[in-house]
Structure formats: structure tokens, C-alpha cells
Length: 251
Image (cartoon, rainbow, N blue to C red; front, side):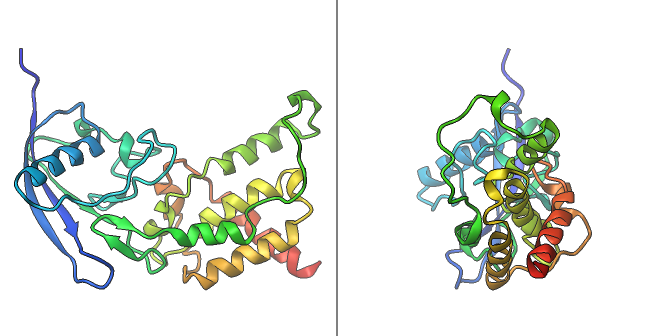
């Protein structure tokens, strides 16, 4: 018995580079397996385009396991698609219905200029991390877990913050294009652990200053960032970022 397939229409944003005018282009996609991942479906589209002598759709991808965060795109108006807590590469076509039109577009943020089609330049995040998202103390090898003087509650909270993969969904979902959730997760992770205490003051000041310099907007307080984050990072980390920043300015 043959596998049931889906016939879809893809409305994809095509743009040559950041200086060119982009537009939506519609493609018919018959014979899509419900068990395909979203990126496998795009691979199939690109195979068809190349065979027809057309240019493939540029999109970012790497691990395809929900770890790296590079598969950043809006799918039907939602960052990474309609399901919570997953990246685009973890989305499967069975989420959609036969005959549906799927709109696919890149992140929309001033600080994330479009490189081509669905690919945006997220190097602003890297420069924020270079500004202070590190520790310079010698931590040595990994000690026995029971020997580390950190409570489980604090360790768990630090790990929750460290789960941020820097995909940029928080920025794209925010009406102000704010990077507060990303920056707060990175600041919070290190502020909670003793290894990060030495540079606690300079870290938060440097990372916030770089965030502002990159052109990210202010926090909108709508919690759209938390709602669309594939790792479900809590906005409570933004509260900690604000506390760390005020403490740095007062000390």
C-alpha cells in the first residue's frame, strides 16, 4: 500500500541580498510525505528547482536536531512554526493539512539583515557574546559533581538559562526587535555560578552596551519572546538581567 502524501503550496520570501527588493514566490509541492521534516521538504523543493534550472532557496541549517538554532525562519507567521518548544528542523509535515498554503519568511529585525532568501546575519549575537559572555578564570578539569558547592536549585536554573541556543526567535517575535531574552539568558547563566562572579559587574555592562550598539530595541513586555522560544527560556531571566545591571551601576 502506497504512503499517503500531501499536496501543498509554499509561499516563500525570495531576496537576492540585503540591498535588493524581495518578494514572495509561490511554489507547488505535490507528493510531500507527512513524515518529512520541514527542512527535508525544503530540500525536496530545492532538488526540483535545481533540476528545472532554477536557483535553490537559501536557508540556514546545520545539526537538524534542535541543538544549533540555525534553522531560523517564520512559518505561517510563527517563529519556527506552529508548535511550541521546537525548532524548524524538528517540525514535521504532518503538522500541516493537505492542500494548505504555507508562508515561509526570514527573521524580521533591524539587527538581523537579510543575507539571501531565508538567511539572515545573526553575527550581532556573536559580538554580544564576545563583549562579555565568558569567564576568564581557570576552572580546570571537570570536578566530581558532589564536590561543587552549588545547590541543585541554582545549578538547575543556570542550566535552564544555558539551554538558550541563540536562534534569534525572541528578537524576531518581539515587536521592538529586542534581544533581552537572549542576553538575559547568557548573563543569568554566568551570574548564578561562582565561576562568573569575578566579572559579574563588567559582564552585564559590556553585554548590554553591545546589545544597544547593535540596534536591538527595548523589551516590549509582551512576553512574545518566551512564547516563541524553542527552548522555552523564561522571562524571569530578564528580571535578573535588570537586577544585575542596576547592581553593576550602583556598586
